[in-house]
Image 1 (cartoon, rainbow, N blue to C red):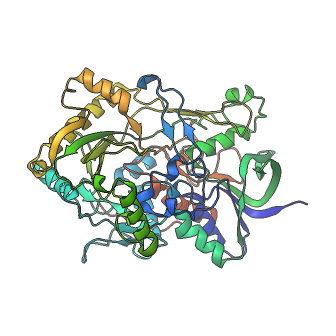
Image 2: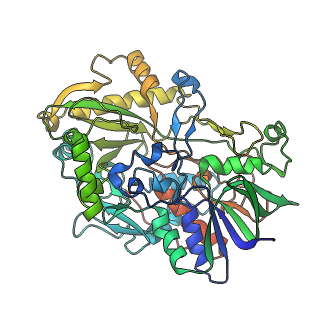
Image 3: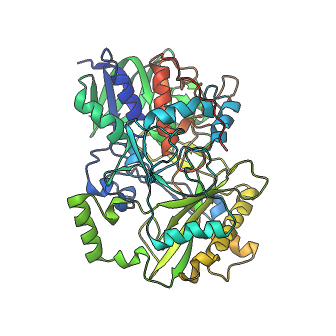
Length: 545
């Protein structure tokens, strides 16, 4: 039996869910989404405070790791990617950051025409249903009726209040809405949380469409390759269990499988650097050298401080308290379980010469790692990292088997400026923690420890402790036809292959400031209009501060 549909969307993540929903608004089209993972109904996914669990579970995470990183002493860093309905929007930290306006203006300068801030702001507004923490907040920069629920955190913990006060005392800026007129400053974070639950892209877009529309279906399976004939994408091959299936597309195939899996699938389909593909006997469909190149990420360090008062979340870090928090959340969707606890942070300039913020801070009223390991006793920490590293990595095939793990090499910390940037970050955190607002809470510096002071000592600490912020992107970058390393054009169409697009974080020309879930969803919104042949939304020529 020959199976066919109009549009095939590979992946149900941050962009794929959006595209599927928007295309299905046209009842004349049949939409099929193929997702390798399963249901997102688990409380471990839906409970915001449980965020560390799904990103460390094989059931929900692809379990990727980097290759040994040359500049980090051969360490292999975890690279979680969502393998579940909603993709990485179902296992991320739920912090919502659009990026800085200049990020998108730079995209446009790099050849992504029509993707400047004035072009993308209307799509950010279309997708958002923003709930500010204060009555009378300026909503002119924000969307208030879109499908994606976004709430501004209301921090109450005294350590969070101390952090915000310390920023003021250090002479640093405060911003009422870092996703609005001005990103720079200390702030309350926006969260993709609604009614005490995670609000993923699937919950915002795909699940409602599946419930209410007859022209969209969800299939479970692992896509292994795009089938191309004479330079035209015709269908996909996918595995369900060990059985191979083929599905044909009469209109288009949209690859939305993540910055790791999208270039991986393209290469196994014969689309990528020809010399690399020939090594594994893969027939060449189109020699695109940029596939798998330009890999970018944010790195961060945890700077941990002992807390002298029992006001941190450590008092809840025991089985009984965790059980009570979980029960309250299950029954009422309230309490500590209803927040990701990343409620305050900052976007700052490393020095006066920076044209816009290049450092992000997350504050947490607990001394703990993403894997759940933690310092003993009460503490608090700042996650800090530079936003615009010049280091670039690659995604490559390990062999000719499409079910093998990809070779992920970020090439972290390969530029001398990376080390200088991180030393600035550590010294900035120490300056913040030294402010009067922390006097009544501040104990001993747990990590790195005050004995670590010189550039060499700081470099050693960085090498041993830096971790990924889990923001990989850029591996199928968008650009002009004259850019030999560009993979897709400004409408997300793959160069040299008809009826094939890539729509996810892999098309970022450069990484954006902050967490990348929001711009990935925005890409899904804007790309949908391109796919449907709609005139893009009118530009909004506003000038941010």
